[in-house]
Amino acid sequence: MNTLPQSLPGKRLLLTAALAVLALAGLAARPAAAEELAKNLFGAQKLPAVAAPQSIGFYSKGCFAGGVAIPLNGPKWEVMRPSRNRRWGHPTMIALIEKLSRDAAADGWPGLLVGDISQPRGGPMLTGHASHQIGLDADIWLTPMPDRKLSLEQRENMSATLLVDEKTHLVKDALWAPAHTRLLKRAASYAEVERILVNPGIKKKLCDTVKGDRGWLRKVRPFWGHDYHFHIRIGCQPGSPKCKAQENTAPGDGCDQSLAWWFTEEPWRPNKNPDRPKARDLMTMASLPAACQAVLDGPDPASAEAVTYYGDGVPVAAAPVLTKAPSPARASASGAAALPATANAYAETPEIGIPLPRPRPGG
Ligand SMILES: [Zn+2]
Image (tube, rainbow, N blue to C red; front, top):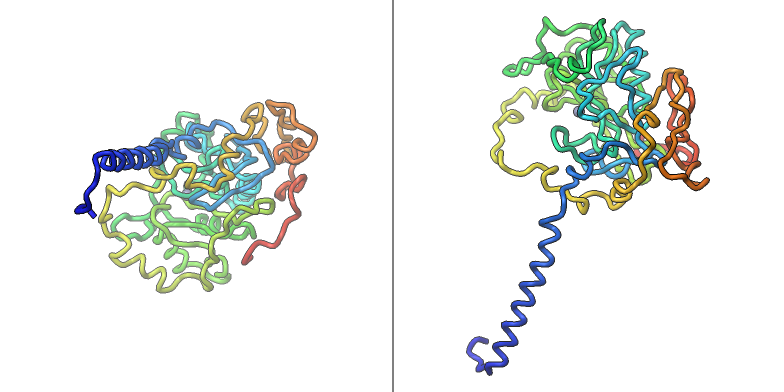
């Protein structure tokens, strides 16, 4: 076509058209390139969105509304690294941690050191975890709560104890105690808990030593890291139609070839492409479910204290006072307002204003 004769005006027209295409391409590319990363937007949130509790999306790609905080101190727990402000979760997750702290204490574990749960509105984080985005994941240290209360500074700086040898990937026997097994078994015992992630060395220790009932081992899955803490993951909760369930765990106790693989060289090979950006360095709001924009824009509660969940018979600090006066419909749909003033040992997800529980998919 270049051989076809063209008049000068024709050439000029072509050039104009080409410039227009370039300009359009530039316009299309610019917002994507300049669009702020979701981790910056969610990482800047100080408070949850007041709404009925709802997880949106997947554990590693989503957000949540109606989050509540676990208090920094409980009778049988202390929150670690409090400056990170990751003590937020779906009310069911927070109630479950509080219940675990009591049950574990009854089993002889002095108390829980609570690690990261989620950011106030979930979403990708500036550092650390790929998951923990929808308020249904929590890390609990494998170190028992000391008998002297930790200061805030100690909670920021106390170093964690690695229970697994980095070379052999086996548990350090001098540090492992039957109490660790009891704690993990207790955590796995709750119906809401779908998975517990531990280092492969810890999974192997359980496989080698647990006698009698081994059914709970099915929930305990080997994963990288998780050598000073374990990770509790609960399933999608009622009232979260946009929550994406994970696949069921394979049948059996998992003490099989799938575990043996972790003791080969393959999972520990150096990353061939260490400079490849992580998901959180690419995710914009367009990567997340559309409903996450509404979560980001949702109203703040009056304070963190107003949406802190005391599940131990201690009243929630009155009913949360919203920053904007809600319509009656909004007030009744507010998960925060629906929190029980006092909770029994294990409070179910509040049902006020949210659909009745449905059987969990694949549950
Ligand atoms: Zn974790």
